[in-house]
Amino acid sequence: MEKKPFVTLEQLREMKKTYPTPFHLYDEKGIRRNAQKLKEAFSWNPGFREYFAVKATPNPFIIDILKELGCGVDCSSETELLMAEAMGYRGELIMFSSNDTPAEEFRLADRLGAIINLDDFTHIDFLEKTIGHIPETISCRYNPGGLFKISNDIMDNPGDSKYGMTAAQLKEAFRVLQEKGAKRFGIHAFLASNTVTNEYYPMLARVLFEKAVQLKEETGADIRFINLSGGIGIPYRPDQEANDIAAIGEGVRQAYEEILVPAGMGDVALCTELGRFMLGPYGCLVTTAIHEKHTHKEYIGVDACAVNLMRPAMYGAYHHITVMGKEDRPHDHKYDVTGSLCENNDKFAIDRMLPEIEKGDILVIHDTGAHGFAMGYNYNGKLRSAELLLKEDGSVQMIRRAETPKDYFATFDFSGLFE
Ligand SMILES: *Cc1c(COP(=O)(O)O)cnc(C)c1O
Image (cartoon, rainbow, N blue to C red; front, side, top):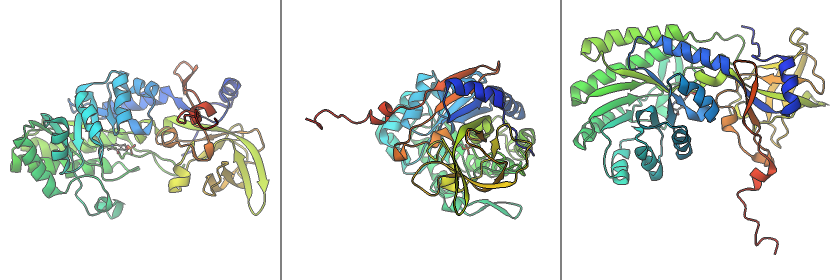
């Protein structure tokens, strides 16, 4: 499918007058519409809740849109918990799905009354020693190992992933946790990332539902919720077809009817911790071409670099690029689109066919709404960009200012250095 930006060249020219490029821009209308569709897809399950994976887009103004639609938050660290607290989240609206967890983070999660999702069997003791008790509501993360396949396609390799407990550990964990006072249980698993297929969630649901029935029989634990976690992907490439969330919800419903209902578990609530699916397509990185270079290849240098969007450099990930205003021109130039880091992998595109680009052209790099700005860093002394929100009424709100050199130097105390 043709990928079109959610913003026009005229709007971007107007924004550039106030906010210099690069910046990340988010689409409130798209975020709302998509979140509403997710809610509808799972409306058959009365306890359903999406806990937005804060790490994907840790901006309170974005999270506030989802909060209005009833979403909770999935936090993975102390600062994410602090952000949730500052936004008024408490108790079971916070899922704390961390791993290799420092003691202070368990303390903070407990103080906020968050649901703690244990990544490992040894964390039971660690948690008890740290906070002095075991919470009455607790969740455990499952890793069945092996390869996760759909038909004959390998989706991912849980056997090689650091997360979660083995089946034997999970059973033992439920037994021990009950002894220590836990009363209400959840099960969580994240077995494949960025899946662009309607089959992943229903397949994962089957694995978790069967495990839940088995654990209930074996340990008598009162299983209240099953957490399907993240992993629903988005079509980064124009030739990929977007997931149909209604079909995914229906696939999970069938598994629920087949497995949980007959086992007398028809009251189990489902939850999700989606990040990419909630925000990915509803953000873009806006950047300006500032140089062209003709050597052994044709290069376009832009004013953004990998610190603003790390995925291409880190995973070789594809992000579609639209040269604004030139959508209908022939894509007859082969370019590497680069940033300015002293790293040869700082390229947003390699050998990409695009229309002829001139200095000053505005480029939209698509699908940066999740795991985009969030993965930013300061290598080469580069600064994080601003984040802007294109509101439903067409107005623009700056929801995070760009960093300045002062921010970069803020962690030094220069007193004493130049005396
Ligand atoms: C990263 C993560 C998510 C979100 O993953 P997406 O691929 O963005 O949907 C959810 N849960 C946990 C525990 C994660 O680590």
